[in-house]
Image 1 (cartoon, each protein chain N blue to C red):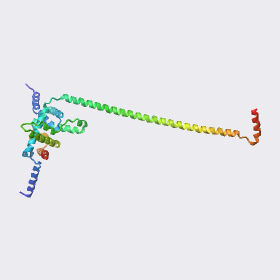
Image 2: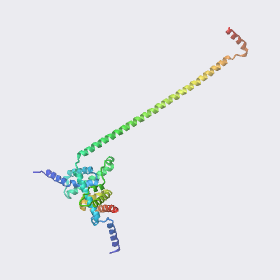
Image 3: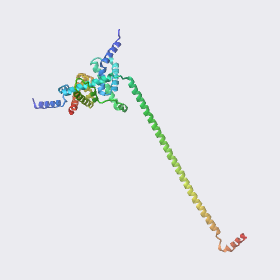
Image 4: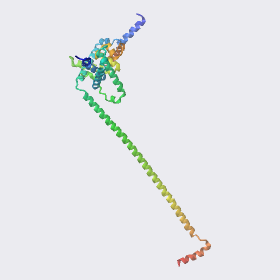
Length: 180
Length: 156
């Protein structure tokens, strides 16, 4: 018969298997650095593992993990600002380069080029957003989280999330509009 | 609708038109072009993330980075220490050179002064000797016949 500890370990393994890729994706799109995203993902699950017993399931495991990831990312940038050496080691790429990964689908070459250009513009606009706006935007439009989940993950109230999202969308729209 | 309500409604419409309304989802959905761009952006990020996620990579790379970081740190440290030491040595050498040059200059100055003093002394001695000889040749006029006799005796 499995002990409570073994059950908890199995549960946690299932959570890791289910959410690891999504957490990595969010951190990758936020930091634009593959190595850093990988490192922060590992830290996120390490932290989650240490605190797994205190997770009461008030929010979904995904929201809880996302909250840890957001905090780790914030800590990283806060430390980074003070550390010159870390700054020189950045491997981040432009988010507009994500357009290179756009699946071709069933588009014509022209449509594909246009779609890539648009994705590049969105990426450029997202890079220009404030940290909070970018986080909220990515959670909504890349991770497809509900506003209430975003509010819980970021620790903001729903109204503030909406305001940040509105500004972010306005910025993206302006970027797209300016190139039409 | 009151005047105030009309103004509020107009302001709300203006903010919605600028994409700054309270319902961002509606904003994105109302604009098919924006909606499509956002969907394509999501697909791109997902594809990029998937490719990065399955890429073989891990602790080795981080270890290598750490080794590189250590190596660079050590190299930089060595350069700094060597630079600091060589600067100290160079400054010390310069100071030594300056003090040696000052010592030589002082010695030369003293030697020159000594030579000058010796010359002055020599000149004084010569003058005194000349004065002595001049004085010794002087014979009172009344003694001149006697002096001539003495001179004759000596020649004999």
